[in-house]
Image 1 (tube, rainbow, N blue to C red):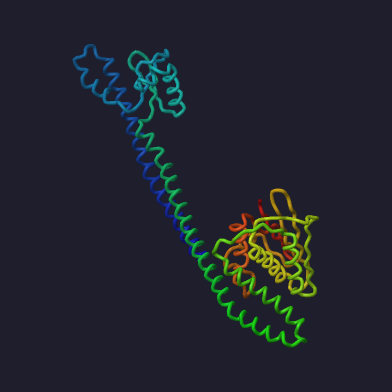
Image 2: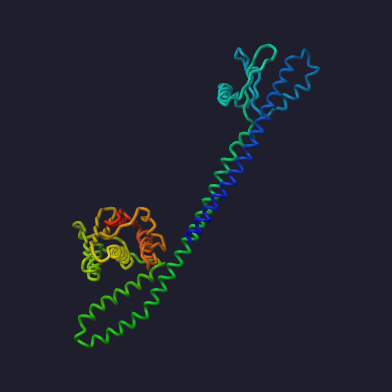
Length: 379
């Protein structure tokens, strides 16, 4: 599915770049042709002005006058050697409003190297010329096209990404609810068998422990049933909640694994949360740490409570992971276990980010030394 998304994204980008390249090449060719044509038009206009200056009477001036008058689009400034402006074809309103407008245009055309020198019969003069409004718009057209295509490609990529993510969410929610439904029947049966075992006094201690696990299974089923629906958040103290989770997991961890919790002196750290879902996140992190340590090591949960946020670090002495996996571990379907489905951390991230207004990420990890996951809950 991810490969398909990358293929579509790559196709959209390449298609957009191909359109931009072809358009840029085509428009660039037209622009150069127009520049040459406008320069020729400037020269023709100058020839018309020269001819008018050389006439002794106006009897033959009609043709030259019409040539000069036809130029209404290309700005031209003719400056004689003594600095006087012989001819100005600019916006008359701008010239009247700004006394420095002509000088600014001369500097602009000079910087663009759009000028040449010609002899009008009474001395050499410099002809400065600019581009027509149409040519200026044409020069910016490729940039506009690039911007439009970039927006188009971005919209396509976002749409594909959202479609893929929506489909993934539907799959995970469906699987979660189906798991909760399937667990209901055997749990009811186990509860019935436990009631029968209670009749024998010798089984009391074992039954009590089994009942704890049954209650845990019911909690797990409840967690799965809540995926996809908005949970009810209640203000709870995280200190006893984390301690209870550590105590519960310690009893079920290998003997050579030590699980500890440090609240750094805080007796209370209240936050709006869904208890069952939050417990699931912590339990998932601890179980992943247990898998990474392969039967021996330490898991330490460190909590820091401030006015604005609660920071929880889950550290283990497991096998660690490379930096390239820091973000991948939260992707649905990504797992380093041979039999893993890659759902745990994906759902954990959804629970923390979406439901609890927090963040969960890999703070640091080192191959052979361990990993630290960090949860930040912002008030």
